Length: 551
Image (cartoon, rainbow, N blue to C red; front, top):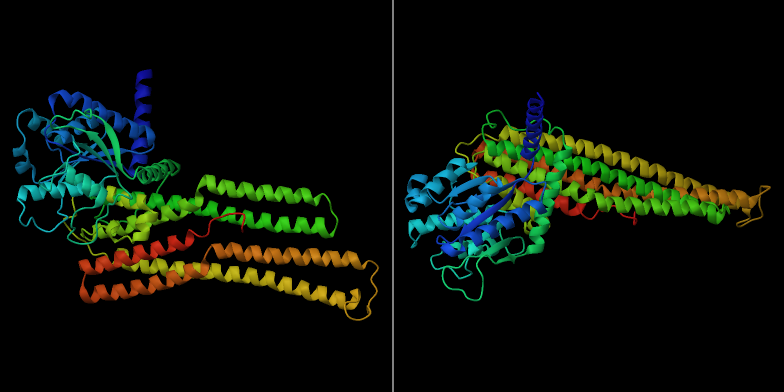
């Protein structure tokens, strides 16, 4: 009876884990390696691969891992064996159709290839990234495209390599260069990899005599610091998805849910949107608390300075500590960055989702501006990781679900932003009117009772008391006016309103273009690029609005 209950509980926990995993970005380990590994080196290299995979999983414990491999004989199969032992799922990105590719294998190699292929999470033939083979053989061209695909779609590349330059344009050395330098010629767009946002785990795998270096020696090539940040922020996002109980209703049209890649992208996009809104709420509360602490600090200091209320100096200290604590909490919670970047992830994934639904092979990551690639490299990597798989075979009309839906969204959002802007203007104007009113009252008081120019017309028993009261009120209201204006200024409401209005007009224009010209790859690229650019612009100006004591 007890065993039965444990089994049931284990099943429930597994279901919850699987549900969370669906909202997580997988960390993709790409693989490239020599086809021939010396027999005496095999166990050493296998141990090095296993150790590196375990290290990565320990370092990023909240993320699911997958291995992306072409399953070529030698290094690829060795890494697949290690992944299987560690329970890491495999995605097989084949250079050509299985019936042709299997001819490369013989004996035990063929048996291992078949076993891994049968157990793989996905199996597909990679699409070409470059134009046709030209003077190169078709076989070399196909292996080259597979190397480009693996290098472009992984977070980190594991290379079982002797460090020597390549000779045929399609081997391990070239794949390392694809990852670190983007040294290929895409048929369209730009290379997505550079040494600034990529790293290679080089496991030394000799093919001949190398007396100066031991087989299995590990070193990191590329930008270790940048990739550590990319993986860290990916793991941080995955950790935060555990806070989400439900991701809400799917935005995918009917008929799209049969595509597992689409459904996963949609799910993660919605999860990112929820996390962004949570972070935005915390960010705005911190801004409000900083503004309130600043106003109270001003009032307390004026009471101390003008009214001689000595204990108010303690209130000043308390407000300074409160403001410091708010700023520190803002930094520790990282709410400002999460607010911006999780929204950028949600929007980018939504664009990629609709491109795929339209049947397009356009990569949203390839439309990122250079600034977006530099500032949010982890989002670029997430897009590439989540699009691993076959390109869509059928397309759907996206005018209603994308263009018209976004037009309506921006119309409603501009109305809300306009209302918020009106409210902020009204509050600031009221505070300003109060400041002006108090100033005029102070001037009038000085003219009538304080002898500013003429002899006092009215006699007041305690001139200094009322003068002090007016000073405190005027100073406090003026400070409140400034802090309120600064608070709303950091929300960038005029810019947000302008952006929503521009995008509403853009989608209206695109709807007309689609009606007139039909759904072409050119129009889809324009749609995606403009939306990503708008999102990049929003992210850029929001980055300047950090919550700090300068408020």
